[in-house]
Structures are given as structure tokens and as C-alpha cells.
Length: 154
Image 1 (cartoon, rainbow, N blue to C red):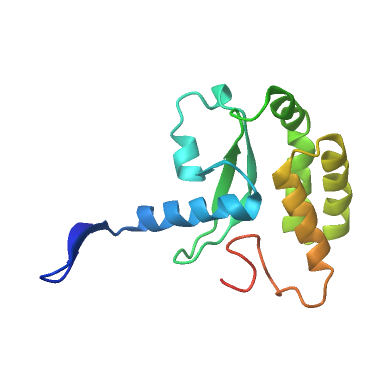
Image 2 (cartoon, rainbow, N blue to C red):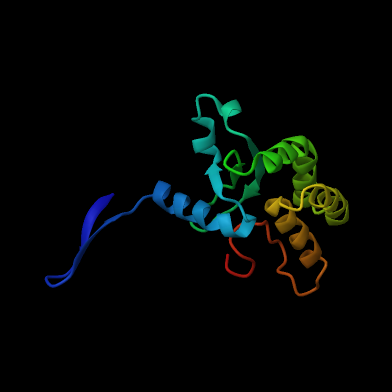
């Protein structure tokens, strides 16, 4: 919905919709995942030639305002060539680590993520997942956190 909000002295145009809310949440996840470009699955599936855009799934998250989880993809083709090459090399291991994380097999996920980060210290998404694995070992970590909005704010 597109509309004008405000009063006689101050008015502003705004857009309100489920898609806008999701886009805003995905944009916010760039900080959570330390990624430059993220796409929700619906948008990713609309790419006509996804193989032209180096990418990997970052996981499935539940965002505020949505009842169904959303798979989020990282597009990393704009990163330096060496970082792109290393992310492509580790894509399958990264996907395995994300799956282990989702299955709450944090020690196994941590071991794989540590390998990825050691081989590619510039892989900030892997480093973010590694931090989260380590935080989950902390008894103060929020129960059931799925990697969506920052822990404690969902």
C-alpha cells in the first residue's frame, strides 16, 4: 500500500506491505550475517541466471512479522576475486555447517566453520556463524535463537 501519512503541517509518503517489511528485515540481516548483499528466497528464485552471481544460502530464518521461515542467500560477486574463489571452494562445507547449526549440532558446525575461516579469514558470514556457535555454548544465550533478528529482539 502506498500512501501519505502525517498532518496539515507535516506530510510524508510511505509504503506498507508484507514485501516491504520482509525487504527491511533482510536488509537488517546484512549486519547479522556480515554480508554485503542478501536476497530472500523468493527474490533469489526470480534470478534468470543465478549461476552468473556467485552465491550461497546463508540459512533459513524467521523474521519479525512473518510466520513462515525464509531462506536467505548471500550474493558475493562484488567481493575481491580471491575471496569469491575461496567462498566458492567452501560453499558445500559452508552449507553443511549451516545445516549442522540448524540441527543444533553446534560443535560439529563450529569445527567446519573454523576450517572455513582459517582458510578464508575474509569470510565474514562464516565468522559470524562461528561466533554464534560459540555464543550458543554460553548458558546466557537465548533459547531457540535461529539466526534471525539479533538474539533477544525477536
